[in-house]
Length: 261
Length: 257
Ligand SMILES: Nc1ncnc2c1ncn2[C@@H]1O[C@H](COP(=O)(O)OP(=O)(O)OP(=O)(O)O)[C@@H](O)[C@H]1O
Ligand SMILES: [Mg+2]
Image (cartoon, chains in turn green, cyan):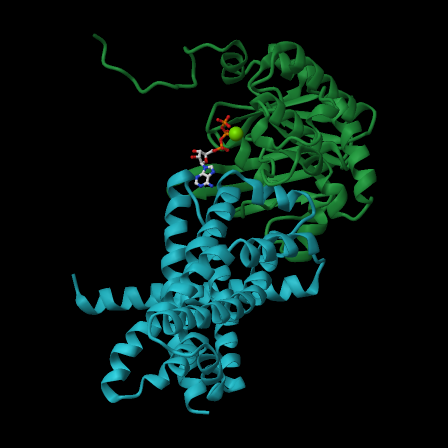
């Protein structure tokens, strides 16, 4: 399979919080028009990685190029221009709780002054339909929604402007299995039909198999394995094997060694 | 510990914080003025600060006016000069107590709310989300609040001045035996435009301080509910101290002119 050019190219990315060295020289290429899923244990820095790419967290070192443009060290107008390419679903949805659902979904459209308010509302309704929500939620406030509904509104907000690059931080967490499959389909469709580049984070292996073209595994601040989804079952990598089969025993130590009793 | 080192460290921390706040204010104003503008947000904040603060500021003003009349009667009747009461009340209100008390009340009401709202937006990643939706939080969140503080506090103080004089009038006429017409006439006898204007200038500065501290503390808060709570407290305390400090400095400037 010939690989398309990298939409996002990351080299030697470093990010620490005090003594907590989260990303320790991470290399990753995100191919254009494909769906990449990043897997890895809780707290390994997956969300931090996405935020570094968006410039929401300032990387300590290394390079992140989006379409050849450097993000690390970029400021002001340059950063704002690069960010226009992205849509992001945050892990905690991060909905604006002072605005009703429809204004949340249409926020990017209104901010870019692409449409008037009446049309924005129509577009919000159409986008909400894609995540399985109807007109009855339009005028509700985020606090009035269930967790799973908030997540879907966050997803609708991320895709409303049909950006080139989509980041989904745990899109199916907190959803029932049927709704999770609807969302998996939506991610696939965004990539296949709209030609977007997607980077998703998920712990749900069923979801990984549904949405990924490629998979990258993050461990101890680096990508320790990266490959096509078809290769994941015989990656030959003990860390990946332990992760995808969800075993407590293996090279990844989760529990501190306990004294034998 | 070495006392010199400790002093140095405190000095460095204080000057860095001051520098950060000044930079934050300039950044917010310059970016905000350059646009894009968010008139809806500005309007919303003006209503929040101006309209919803009316009851608390009005109550403060009327009781202050009443107390002023009573206290100055006690003082000035000893000099056989109770006629000075209307002048005392109106000058104290317009020059000093109107802006300072309104500023402090608004710091408690609005400054705290701003810090809590922005702080919550920070810790729940709503501010990050703004960045990803082609919106600059300084333009969208901070600038409207700074402008609303700057514009609305003078209006509030104007109302407070009137209500304060009314409070003085009520006590003087119904308790101290002043004639109603006489009281009103005396109120305006010695009142100059500068008395009112200096109070309004103070109010604008105080309004800006309240909004700035609310926004700065909220915007930079971290660490969940506890962090937001701490930011709220810091916003109110620092705004109150800055109001009293700025009040002296402004009075000094007006005094020497
Ligand atoms: N703003 C921050 N300040 C300080 N430390 C942070 C911050 N954000 C993340 N961290 C730390 O960085 C590490 C990675 O966090 P991150 O949120 O990226 O994990 P994750 O891989 O997304 O985990 P999960 O799957 O549980 O969401 C954690 O140890 C966390 O404590
Ligand atoms: Mg995460």
